[in-house]
Each structure stands twice: as C-alpha cells, then as structure tokens.
Image (cartoon, rainbow, N blue to C red; front, side, top):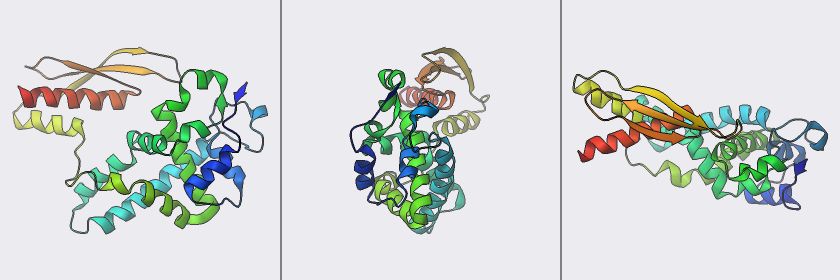
Length: 234
C-alpha cells in the first residue's frame, strides 16, 4: 500500500520551489518513490529514477557554470573539488532536508515506516528528480533559479576549495613515504533499501579507524576524515 503525502502536497512543494508547473505530473513523478506500486502511482508513469538521472546532469552543468562565474581566478583542479562537494549526495540530502522534501514524497507504508522520509540518500535522489522536473517544465532558467537559491549558502561555505578526505589522507601518506591507505568492509547491516556500511581504513604504522555510512563511498570518506583527525591530534 502507498502512504500518501499531506493533502495538496504537490501544490505546496511547487509553491516552495517558486515555480508554477504547466505539467504537474512531472513534479508528482519527481516525488514518487520507487517503492510505490505502478497501480498506485496515479498520473505518474514512473518513479523518480528517470528524472533523477536527468537532474543529476542538469545540476552538474549549473554548478559548473556557477563556479566559473563565482571563482574566476581558480584553476580547474580547485573548481573540480568544489564541484564534487556541491553535487555529492550529502549536499543534496541536506538541501532536500531544508526544503522539507521528505514530507511531500509518495512512498509505500513500509518505506515510510522504516524512516524513508528522513533518509538522506532518498532525499538526495528526490532532490535531483525535482531539478529534472523543473528543467523539463520550465527550462534551464527554472532549474537555475532553484539551484542558485538553494545552494547559495553552500557554495560560499568554504573559502578555500574543499579537499576530499580520502585524497587528503592519500597525500598525507605519500608525503611520508607510506603505502596508500587501504579500505576494508568490516560489516553491513540494515535492510536493502537503507543499508549501513562499516568501513575500516588501514594505514601501516597507525591504529586502524572505522566509520559508518549509508554507502561504501560515504563510509570510506568518514573513516578517512576520522583518521585524519586522529593524526592531526596525535
């Protein structure tokens, strides 16, 4: 069974996005979680995966365009690090949380009961889908307006280009003639739709450090960041 969002949720979110959809079906599709059965999707032909696919590409382009304008003196490498930080799932999940995207999602009762409306990965996927819907309905300008309004504080969060913790740890090890860090999967828990990975990072000569995350990539970043903090304090 499907657990519907609040009444008139699609219209409410459209108001929050600042865009009047000519085709509201696009926004409904962007809000439809894959857990919703085809017979319960109403006017939405698909779940949000297709629009998520499009929104990912649109967001990447818009952020790249904005970075070129915002940081005219920075080289490509610095812009690439900023871009990675701004389009990663964690940032998208943060944006989705801020606009209250979770309460507008159409999802199964099981998914909702398991905390799906607050799941960062789900919010990230749906946020990309919303960007895709804005692009299809209102063109690049509508998508750009949303991205620039919601990423405005995030883009100026770091005065210097952020560095991925895994890259920083690798460079730290190389500068000291050490082998590259090794990342091992220690365990996996939780249901398939909401997994939790435990990753341990091993650097010869130092105690291994482990961290948790909803994906291997996120858990590896968290472990690297934790080890960097340990090295800095030691």
